[in-house]
Length: 291
Image (tube, rainbow, N blue to C red; front, side, top):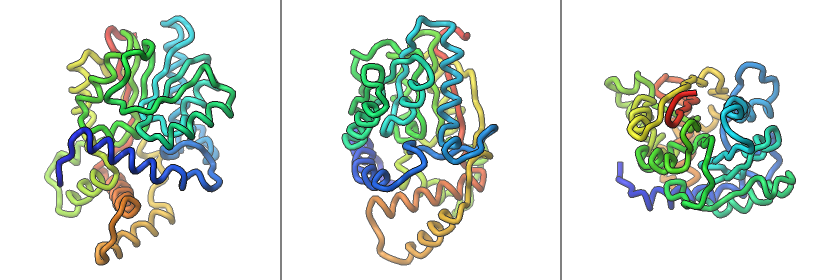
């Protein structure tokens, strides 16, 4: 696999989201969320499934509210078009800042925030979350939903956040992680799955939770939650089977480009989740003394 520097990795992610965001939101959708639906406990509709992770984060905000003066400052690292922050600010008296590397997403987010009448409480900033401005207010809770894997270096991700999260505050990552099974000898097919997922999903930081935890602990974070959500994902839907067939056919054709590469990566992710090589987890770290 070719190496990527932090600069080219960020450019690849920016180009991908700049290219695809308008297409995704150019048709009716159940949710403004870009992340996956999670059919966890109490979920009855697709819209609720897309909000499941946001509700988990809302629960953490409510727990933190007894430890900090209101309003809590919440930082979304990889915010998409701001759907999670809009949800959180609509259900709690937070102030939120969303970070996206995509100029297209930032513009969509600003419009979404204005439509929700949250201007002044929620903002969106276009920048690389590895190079956050020092002017950001102290953060009581920072989170990334399906954005951590895009970081070219997990150590750099945790280093970037630790400057802004206050002692006692939380950092939450909800994303794909390698399982313990993936650390064992792999078949050729399994190795190809993970390679295609990393390349097609732009996921250089696809690592184990243990690896992420080691990075976090070096900077003073302490893991306080680790929940496996994989069983709540809707895997191998009819659409996914069509994509798998398309990818299988495409292996014999000269197909290229961002869209096809993302199909290959998404198909590999599905296969790796089913095979138990990847797990979708909600992990929280606290900076400084535990609650």
